[in-house]
Image (cartoon, rainbow, N blue to C red; front, side, top):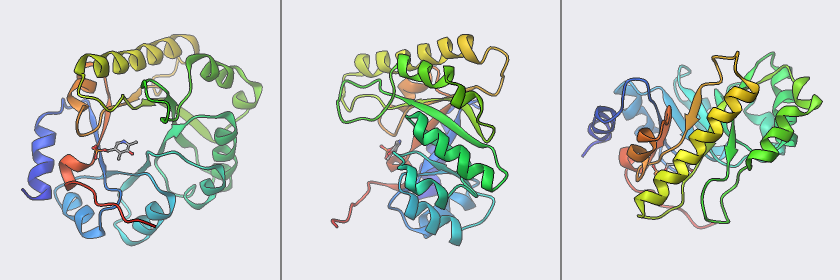
Length: 225
Ligand SMILES: *Cc1c(COP(=O)(O)O)cnc(C)c1O
């Protein structure tokens, strides 16, 4: 099946309120353009260098989402254009995003990444450390970042009950943070969860954004460096 056929198949399964981030990491510009020409405008990348190269050569009305782990020293390279940073997991990173966004007179939308999986390798905050960030005066002084919601990745397993309960725990975190910190902020509204293998479960559990790559673009082939 072609990319546009895959895309339409995925779209057909999404409620209209759920945003689709087409995860194009490792895929060439031609693949992204095929999706673009079928109307897709939200794309996700997990490496800053790749994100920049694609941003520079592709249509400027694409909304670029950085979905992967981000090192503070890379923020400056994309602060002028990135639409949303999905994987914020420290106050230090948030401070750096704020600093670089202010140089461009922008407010960058960020999601707090939570560790919801059983696996140890996945990045992310726990509830208490997120509260520490949100309670800090450093955070309250930041004028150039906006927390739009939360993000998480479930354990890579075919145990759907486990995946479902991990997504449900992220939704609970969202609801708690909303009532504690963002009760008067309707723009704290996003729950980014679900990938090709589990996005339907994520939607059942309240996802507002799903990040789907291989179901649209085909399997990825990684180069060895
Ligand atoms: C690669 C990636 C995805 C998409 O994965 P697929 O299984 O190809 O859909 C989603 N989220 C993050 C954070 C990723 O790194």
